[in-house]
Amino acid sequence: MLTVSGLKRLHISVSFDLQDGECVVLQGPSGVGKTLLLRAIADLDPNEGTVKHDGTLREAMPAPAWRKRVTYLAAEPGWWSDTVQEHFMGWGDAIPLVTRLGLPDDCGPWPIQRLSTGERQRLGLARALMLRSPVLLLDEPTSALDPASAAGVESLIAERISNGTSVIWSTHDDAQARRVGSRIFTMGPDGRIEENGR
Image (cartoon, rainbow, N blue to C red; front, top):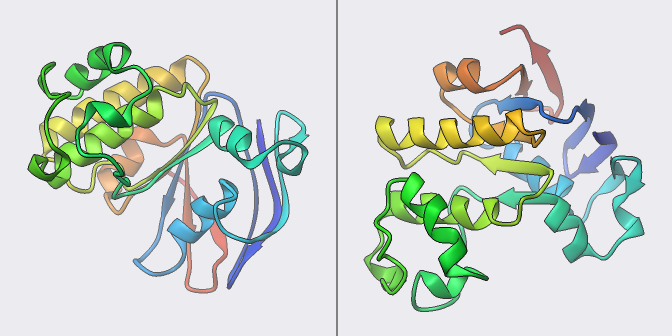
């Protein structure tokens, strides 16, 4: 279980619990702080409050170890090398995930510059899923995808959830929120969240 208690970052102030195998959807207008919240939980930006996973404080472990447990996926993932396969610890192991997300199995040598925004988004997701983190923080993971590709992502994440992965999923798509979320949190301009009925 992920426990967030009195988490503060800039104007944000939230507390909630995320059970194992649960998907909570985070909604709200652009600019209210959804990305700030996800990045704060992953300890990517300075913040105050208590965040625990299975009772262990995030401060009790090095930041890289925490981020392998609680993995944040940006809406636009970062790229630092020239080719796709250089961004994966084991490209051969990643191929089943990559093909499941609708990319060809020979895309490893492709230069990053040739990728569309949607291809980058799916490859970023594959990279994050390779970590097999117990908690995933997904920041609009299908924002650049067509409906078929988005459905593939939803299916893949649903499998992880059924196997016990916990997910916080930020989306502007109300229909998607109802499909993927067991609970829906709406963030307001005051940086607080309210739980909505589905």
